[in-house]
Length: 61
Length: 167
Image (cartoon, rainbow over all chains, first blue to last red; front, side, top):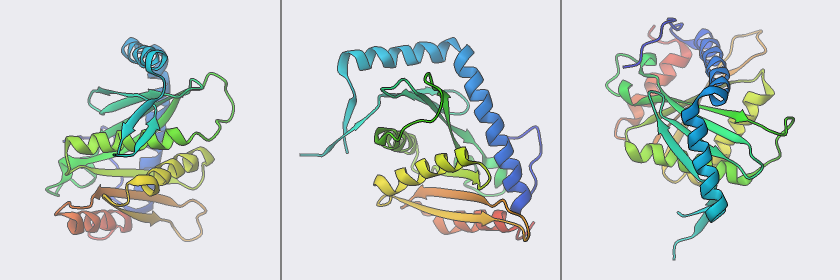
């Protein structure tokens, strides 16, 4: 099970504030990873190749 | 004949946080993560199935505001469905607050997806956390597969968490 280095407040508003701060920090990490992670760049390059060949994806639902 | 929908091709990158990515026609890139979050309800038998959804625009080449693109909601929807297809026991939580317009825009995306084509298959409950005199409200959305046999216990556990009951 996932554990956090920073212990979250137990509940209520304090927990809401803590989770929001953690989420914003994660979003910042995601933006930084995007610029530097070669695996992500390779994956998005594959998506671009797919789009160039097949256009916008269609799915039956 | 089954209806077809347009959406952007996405890729599951996996990893500890179950990462997905996609890129729109204008070249805007999105990443979605499902972060294991059982630490919120460690004593519950369903703790291992709790994931926090985090959505971020990771690349916006034009800068500035992003025009509404209905295919984004459809793509986010398919990503969430794809993740639930890995386990029907999945519990997704989504936290946002009222102080940030960008967060509010992401919350709308989450709601658009749910209204768009999830409401027949999923149940969602929202818990609001606010203190008297404070201007910021925190909203915790909890979403489960409609047939989840533990749904009452799940929603009760998150209600207690939001309200600070039993802590």
